[in-house]
Image (cartoon, rainbow, N blue to C red; front, side, top):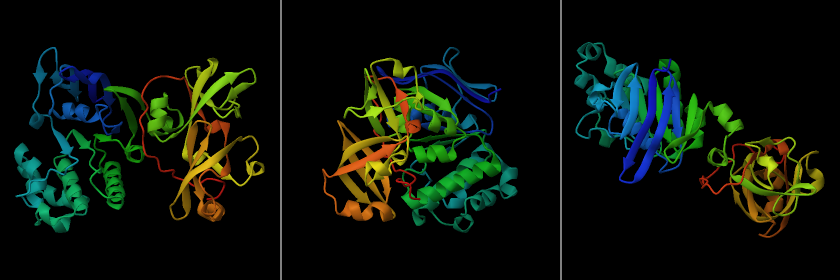
Amino acid sequence: MSRFTVAGLTKTYGSNVVVDQLDLEVEEGEFLVLLGPSGCGKTTTLRCLAGLETPQGGSITFKDHVVFDGRTRTNVPPHKRNIGMVFQSYALWPHMTVRNNIRYPLKVRGRKQALADGAVEAAAEMVDCGALLDRYPSQLSGGQQQRVAVARGLVAQPDLVLFDEPLSNLDARLRDQVRTQIHQLHQRLGFTAVFVTHDQAEAFALGDRLAIMKSGRIEQYDAPERVFENPVSEYVAAFIGMANRLELRRDHDGWRTSAGDAIDLTHALVRDSADRGSAAVARLRPEDVMLHASAEEAPLGNVVLRAELVTYEYGGRYFDVTVATGTEQLLLRADATAHGPALRNSRPGAPVVVSFSPASLRIFPTSGDSVPVVPVVAPVSVGGHP
């Protein structure tokens, strides 16, 4: 049985519905990630769990104890919900030392024995801040402040730890370090957590399950591996990194792109009978697109597209390349050793050849729904070169 349940949760601001009849279940010890773009309702959902926002309807249950119910007007205040909270802005008390910041949740709960047993020091050591206990927040770096905030959120061993985009204010290096530290702490301590982010890399790295949100509802709720391989909609596919989009149309010979290139969908993953109509949308990841000097270099069975170079950006061992085919642009990552010299000598509009396996395609029905625009960094090189 689920230990944390949200049923029919609704939150509005005037006529704006931010959380719309949301249902959610979190198992004890699970790390759930709420993923979605700004305005999708993920932070508002988190704040309702914390008791910082009052929903208009629905219910929230912690360990068989109802903390909110719109019908009975039950609304347990935040300090009685036994939660830990880690905010995006750190939210450390500036007039308190690190020791007193971490100590605060134990103090307000009257946990004198935990204080006597060295819980504050142990929590600080967990996040490598044991040497910082007598400093003030203004004397800490951003990464140190966020690690202190994590220690404060965990020190009282709460039933549920809530993370509100805790890494977004950190630079890239510190973000990776703190993310790894949170993951290690969860593996070691097994606390139950709900983590809000708009970053797909954070979601895949941390989540036992992902809830991808759209307009206050959950679009897909599944394990990261299944979300990655089998997005249920074009919206989800776009948000988890399938940045390349091809509009397909059917003619008497089969399926073709906007540029007129034939595509065999036999080995593609098709959602919702999208291949039965006269038009469909294909999504694929930048890392699934390969760059070639000629069509003859493409692997047997790949879809080969003739395109034009739009731009390229140097990234060290790779180039991020944008090409145009028909009315669409495709993103890919090309190995610098194999393709760097040719790219350096090319100009926008130069003819290029790209290919991809039909199995990398995810096919969806055409729809007028808005699709999130998410910056994508391809995790691996293409063109057959590691």
